[in-house]
Each structure stands twice: as structure tokens, then as C-alpha cells.
Length: 106
Length: 106
DNA sequence: TGGCTATTTGGCCATTATGCCAAGGAGCCA
DNA sequence: TGGCTCCTTGGCATAATGGCCAAATAGCCA
Image 1 (cartoon, helix red, strand yellow):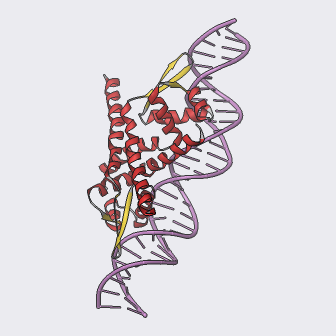
Image 2: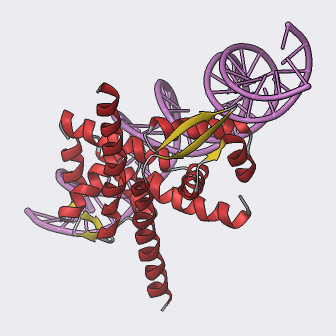
Image 3: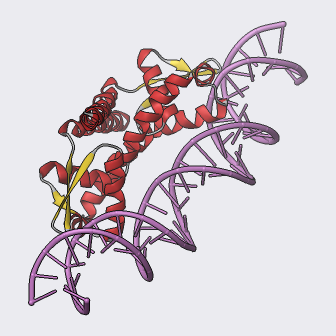
């Protein structure tokens, strides 16, 4: 893998890494419905506000979400919806695995 | 997030975690072209064979690739091609970020 | 069987990721 | 200004990753 390919894949892996956490996937799915403030998201997840703030910050740096301060709250939302295609990719893998299990059990 | 949602997202995050590494993305792209043995992949990446073997094992456990022993070599291949939609998901994010940078520079 | 080649696994170590608490900063309202 | 609420960031402890070397396995072929 030459330097350019290396950079190419490092950059893409960063985006996937940002998604690759249960809480962050939940947040992305949530934000796909509507913009939401940090405290509400924290309540939904059931984790410390600081923890959620960190997850959101990570998603923001990855370019997946944006934030907007309004009053003393910060509302996060998806930067674009096509990132939701992560579902198609993952479901394809899970379905193939499920089919394989059925085949093995036959 | 209740117990079921938690399980749901944990399972999906596992698949994304398997993809979320530069070397593993490279391997997936490579295997999309044709099945390849471990030693050839190791040479392409330029890493220790044991390192590549571990990455492939991880991809296999995630249900993304399969292996087939033939002689004293092991050939890996994609289990299904729809996993390649990771590209669409990631490119959407990168393109949005690029647009944003252009807008900011305007 | 003995020697080779191809892979996987065990061990170790360095680096990164996570999560919570506490502290710090911002904005709102009385 | 003082007190609240909402977020973010610093500090830490713990767990998970990633990589390489060395050792163990498996299959081929003399």
C-alpha cells in the first residue's frame, strides 16, 4: 500500500470509526429524525451528559453531524442524510450471516 | 436506550468496527476484485503476515469475508458484495465536508 | 520422515478509546 | 450581579486495539 492509498484509507477509516460505536449509531439514528439537544440525547441514552457530549464532538469532527447553539442549549443534527446508508452496508453483512447460520443448521 | 436497542446497536457497531481500520478497508477493496491468499495480501499491505492474518480473522468473525483452504494456502474472499456500500456512506460524509470547506473559504 | 512454505496463535508492549466526576465557560433571568 | 441550567473539557482509571516476534500447526513434496 503506497503513501497515497494509505492516506486514502486512513481518512475513510476515520469516518467509519466515528460511526463504529453503539451509542454513536443510536445518536445518528436519533438525529436522522430531528435535531436534538445534548441533554435530551443524554437522557435517551442513559449516560452522563459529558459522555454524550464527547460522542457528539467526535461525530462532529468526523463531519457527520453539525451543531447549533440556541440560547444555552446546543442542538445537533445530521450534516447530510446519505450517511444513513451505513444501515444498508451493515444489514447486508448481518443478513448474509443469518442465511449462513440457517444453512449450517439444515 | 433499552436492552433491546442496546443489543441492536452493539451488533451493528461490531460490523462497522471490523471495517473501521485502514488496512481492513484496503483488504475489503482488494477482495472485492478477487479472492486472494494471506501471503499475497501481506505483501500488498507491507505488513507482517501475522498482522494481516489477524485482520482477516477479525473480518471473518464479523461475517464480512470467508476463507477457503486450498493446499497450504488460505484464500479469502468477500462473503457478499453489498458490504461495499460502505463507500457510498463514507463518500457522502467526505463530500459534505469538502463542500463545507469550500463554502468557508469563499 | 525431514524440510519447506503458508497461516494462525501466544506474548508483550505501546497507543487509543471510553466513561465518569469535577471544574470551567456561556447564556438567561430575576 | 448572583444563581441556574446546559455543555464542554481536564484528569484519571480501565479496557480494547494494533503490531511484531516467536512458537505451534497444517499441508506438500522429496
